[in-house]
Structures are given as C-alpha cells and as structure tokens.
Image (cartoon, rainbow, N blue to C red):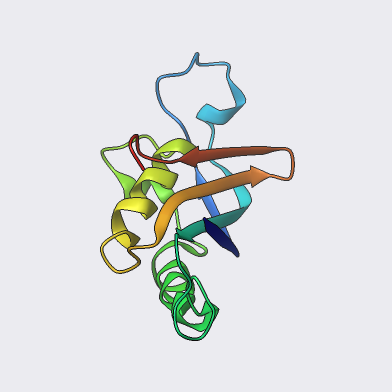
Length: 121
C-alpha cells in the first residue's frame, strides 16, 4: 500500500453551539486551519505516483474560494462547525473526484486535529 498526503492552509472564523454558555468556543473566534488530504493506492500509476500532487489543486481552489476568510457557520449550517464535521464535509466533497482519498484531517491548532476516515476503507 502506498500513501501520500498534502496540506492546505486557510484562516476562518466560527463559533460552536451546544456547549455551556461560558465555554470560550461559543464566542465567535478564528483559527489558522490546516487541512490534510490522505490518499492511497495498492499500485502506482504509470508515472510512479499514487496521484500527481498537481491534481490536488482542486482542493486548494475549493478552500480558497469557499472557506478562506469566511465564517464557517454560514457555510456549514445546519452542521456545527467543528473540526470533525469539517473533515467529513471535505471528504464528501472530494471523494467523488479523488478516488484514492481515504481520509481528511483538519487541524485548528498545531496541537489538535480531527480525522474523518469512513469505516471499511
């Protein structure tokens, strides 16, 4: 099994619902997010790649156009804008065009991340 990953960064704001009123994440705040897409294949293509990294420009384009410097609550409604939900949302968007995709990781800080990887992958 061959695996590759590529990271993409963006800045956005959000607030989370369903938390105690005094929880800091209930207030509007921002993060410098890092999204990592994870791809894998049993065999390499004729060039010797799992996927040409240039073909992942579609991820950067989506992030730049739809997520960067936005309020994630507006984009993800009615979902809570957690890192976990964002990872799943991005997986669902990109899996149809990147069949090698097996997981999406979203980091809000250098010390935290959430990964969505469906069962049976």
